[in-house]
Length: 615
Image (cartoon, rainbow, N blue to C red; front, side, top):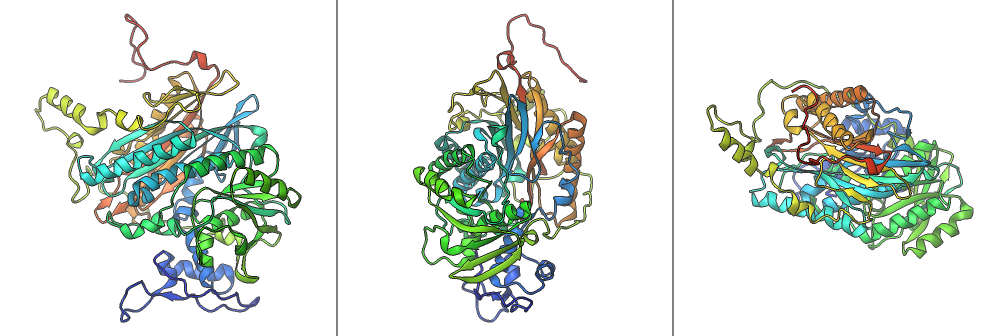
């Protein structure tokens, strides 16, 4: 983080006012300029600081302010989008777990269920392409196996600027290597996705990753911390300084293309540790050793303990002395908000602790009981026996500040490329009278219709031996071991349409995705989404978001499909401009008999080709 937290004093006694939050001077700054208030350097507004004081009944100390800064970030709190996401249809007869959980889960019969989710890792990938993409894959996989499901597939939706620019080419290569490097090593096939080029993504590439898993319904595990007296066990990789402030610095603010100073905020992934984490977590679940399970992603320990406690209506005491660390001299705020990867938090009955530690040790994973569940609803942080922070769990999560942003449609005109961004030839409308053959050749020669083999060949699409149709088709098909069933999955967007009509673009993306599912003979089950937009504080950008949510909701209601969860990524813009409003949609479907699946390829000479629907 760019800020230095100056105070680690113990909380004032009950009912007393703690000293006002400190201030910070940027490293290397001259003494003359006035110091920057700490809350602002952490991404909090003056209004939000007042709201924090109101919820605490006192001023926060510096550690508490750091915890609020990550939990009230756009990335963690959904403070601009929450009220709009609540309008989406989420109920369905087969929905087992939906909005609010780590991933959506839908029953597919025979005691089985499918877990799936789509998320973004846009800002980290813009700063450090390989690690940003790799940890995006790792994070979405953890969302799946946290639910008790074994991950069976990855899909990636990648969007960049003009690939003829050397910088963009480096971004593309780094992201593709990151997706493939992590997925291949962890042993989960990457079976499909999108690779799109458009000038609006020049400074802000989009890296959206979808994962799918299969579980027995009886092994469904919730991300909650029930039972006062139960223990909170942290296991997985040791905690370091990587990713500190990632949620607030990278994912919840606008920055330029040359932000090399942000690189320390990008997490570092270890796919081999993730593989061990998968196996250990699933063994703990299958043996009934955990009461709840939560992965550590954005905001690290702070997010994991506060969200699990708030969901169960409990609190938690956290002892920082128990946290396994890989770096010396870490300050309390660094331990609490580190986003080191490949970590999990398990809620465990005290009598089962030894068994849990034995399982983790057998898989070579550090593990320690860092705290216990309480009935007081408070997150209390201790170090060396001193009480460093005490915050109501709800204040960090469900009772976070929520905004009702202004939304205003832009002037109706064709959107131009961002200033300074070279146009891609195939994105320009042809002049009147242009030879149709020349137009066709220009389209065929453009990057959006070119072969993706150079990228997809870096992905292992068949590891696990369940892939029936891979990334060469609009939807991937996987068999479900031990059954005649198959899973079909796809992800699509219509960002070019969104430049004119974000409502229509979101609806079209749902329609295209479900068509890709249904033409295999599968029944679409549910929808996940990743909504990528510009600065929500700008009325025109927020209008595009609200229109996309309306289009997504109306399309899903028309098709009778539940939206089981997803992700919102705001601030995808730079000084040059915003990205095209991009509602990325993911759909999973079920084939009752995989041997009766249909292929999009022509079957035989002489077959009739029919066009269904209005031309």
